[in-house]
Length: 221
Picture (cartoon, rainbow, N blue to C red):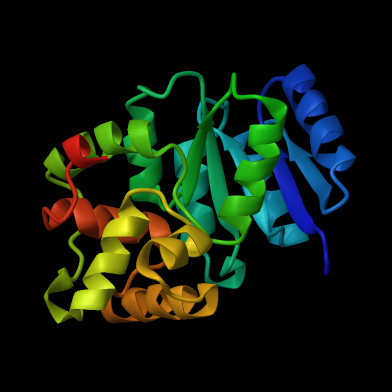
């Protein structure tokens, strides 16, 4: 299996170097580039076609939110996922990052093993990170007048609605399978079918649909 190809974008040289050492220590990952600005991150993403970009929000020249938006909108970079970094999980910019197309987020003071797990998770499109903070952030996100509109869950079967609810609560395919008495492959098939029906790009958008429709609320996490 090919290693996850990671592009690191952070304006602090020491932070990038530490992240690079950590990522390179994992046998299933490799660093394919390092960027100190958002514009450089965009250039290297187009040049290297990584599987995932670890993107700091606050960067000079072009901030991480706009760089994320441009990467996600670029048809030639289809399949490149973005994991955004923030100093605090209450950072309002996370809402904008989700709107821009980020597939997950992580706070900078997370443990090294959690960063590696997060990279694997987002690269695989398996789940949205940090379901607790995500609940708070999406609540604010849905109040925003510019939040995107998505197809509602009315077109889903009862089973698919159950699966969508569990996705929104942060469960991965294996956990969904265990909860519903399914095989992991069947759970994965359900998630893929739900994405197709709702026109969702990834699981992050499925979470937004679940909150927007009222299927899941922060108090139910």
